[in-house]
Length: 301
Image (tube, rainbow, N blue to C red):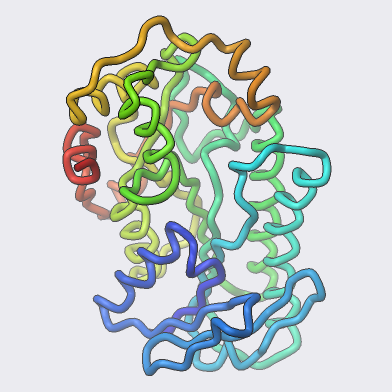
């Protein structure tokens, strides 16, 4: 098998590449930096520039599946200009790939797209499955709705489409966990707002593992990329503090302060999504890290 990855150098992309190589799956990857174009036997880079609708079509040679993780980070302040970039970087990159495939002979059978659990409305008591049809009113919900809609367009080419709605990815070096850990290590860690908001997390090894599982078994559809045991913000904060043997600062950080500090981006920490992992388990995926305690033991020093 040979796979083409957009976003291969990001947090999830790097782990997917590692797991692909473990399974002897060859990887082509797209890069906007000509200096990053490497040509190793199992890892080859190809230039693209989605802004200019440019892509080196050699990237598709002998490729069976495409994994598209491309998209601007949502962890930067959401100015009007940057919000447009968040949307365009997801929609336009997918369309550049689709338009290229339309114009050429290829053997791509499967398109796997990143998505997010932020598509769901914020709720502290509703358990979201993949059958949920209601979309939230937040900016990120609308972004994710557009993201999934452009992924669905690959079915017009007779290609299987899989969408992975990713939760909070826990990794030792990058992503959310180091940001949560930082104030706790300084002795000023505290739950955010009420602390009751649900955080549907997943270990980096498992989110990449889900991609590989769906890729190898050629499974189409929508899947929640979360661990089977979501935790409240309060519980996650407490468990991290315990693992680091640090006290928590009281009181909680009030919601209004987070909104003043982060603006609309405060949705990232204030929204609550209680998300179910049963569908991917029923498909046959076995999680390495089911419980948050075990995941933190693995990831924290």
